[in-house]
Image 1 (cartoon, rainbow, N blue to C red):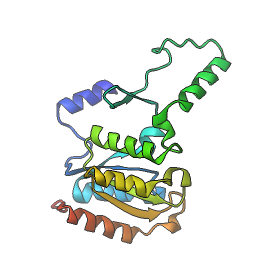
Image 2: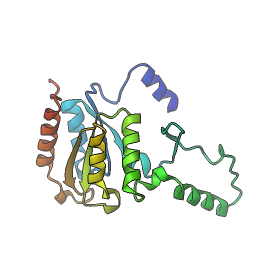
Image 3: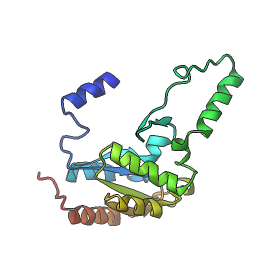
Image 4: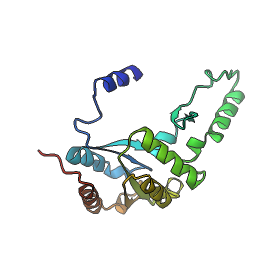
Length: 194
């Protein structure tokens, strides 16, 4: 997969035929309404690079001296030899407990979460962010308005919308689409033609 991605980057092949704006999100989406992301791509050429949730929940990252995030080295590459189940479990638990980048997804300080979101935005060349004020998961929703302010202070436009990842009755699709349209129009992003 790595070789394929490198080849696509070299040849300028992206995730969508037209990319006018690159966004990130912060949490789980409203799972029953994933068509919102197709709408963004199809109507505006807006591409989502993922979210703090998708980048961090199960992934392991390390922070380089320059502050950039890179995939964590495997235990083997770190010189850790696992010879039994107890060592494997202990190594996994220690790794997760000491991974600030992963901890900020469902715990940790709001400042840490702000820092990681800003790093992701800069490293992935994010133009804007959409934050789901997710009533369905308090663990990933903590600090969202502070995250919004931190991104705005970095010059990253932010849209918030309300809903629940797990309850389709707690999401207003027409209202969310209207908010998206107004937000993008306010940034000068026009709908794609035909």
